[in-house]
Length: 120
Image (cartoon, rainbow, N blue to C red; front, side, top):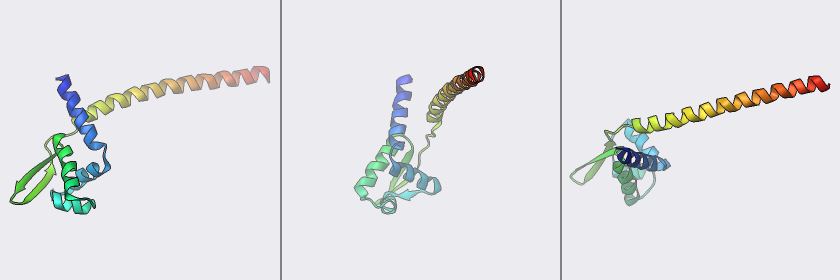
């Protein structure tokens, strides 16, 4: 199970790492689109867009359906819940570390003020 989840996270983050793919997801969030229309919208070749869509499809973030000669793309059924949980876990970790750092800085500032008063 852990290996499967790790592979899913790897696929998702690899897919989301590219700004074009994030843009495709935004576009598909508004409406389904053909690969041809996506390629035109993003100013790229049909082959390039097929590769981007393939990465998104592998991650489960996009699904495609071919009807005749047109391949239509839609948002996939997979949500980003596992990715959100993973990110939140690290956000909490960093927030706790920054809280501890704030305490150290506050203590150092108090000591510095006390030192200034005793020597001033």
